[in-house]
Figure 1 (cartoon, rainbow, N blue to C red):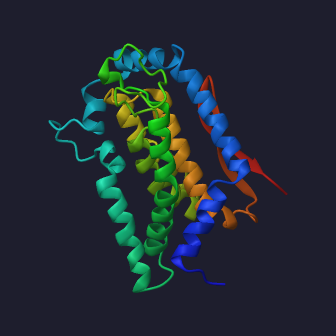
Figure 2 (cartoon, helix red, strand yellow):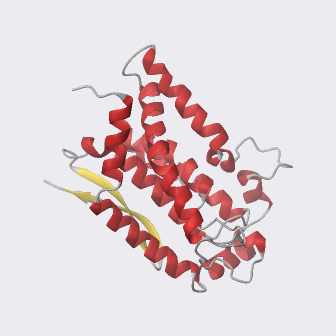
Length: 245
């Protein structure tokens, strides 16, 4: 059965706001709240800035003075990535069922379903950036009157969607899937490196992107023998594989 674009998006929203997914998102934001409202965020931030960040990491992140060709931050720029996804989706109007067109269509759907929720949570959490040097640090200040709305990293969300889509499109090709999962964290990492977001903000941006992409692919997952799911805990985060036979 074929669906119109409107019906497809409506179905995406229905699946995104399903109770099981909302419970997962609530759990993730609960963990994020613990990180943001204790010293966990600041401790990780200070360790990275003092022990890890250097000229090399800056050159891979977004340092404009660098001559390096790779800029991780660029993958999180919505003004570039969203139009690229929409343009790629238009390829399907010329030649249906192409890899480029399908990637663009599914990435675009993930942006459409996930961006409004991500923006809402940025405003709801009301957290500051590290660079703001706000007395509250990463602590949440819902609907902050100072105008802070950074509790979820937009760059982390935008930069994760294209690569998570690639990973989902190649469930049986580990040479593509696992590097794509790794690349999905690049934009978020750049925000930590540049001291533009706290770790919890980056993790939540990536996680919301995963839920948005998972929503788009949800009906394709029923017969999947091995599934990759994100795992978030107070002590860290990562990926967990689940197999069925």
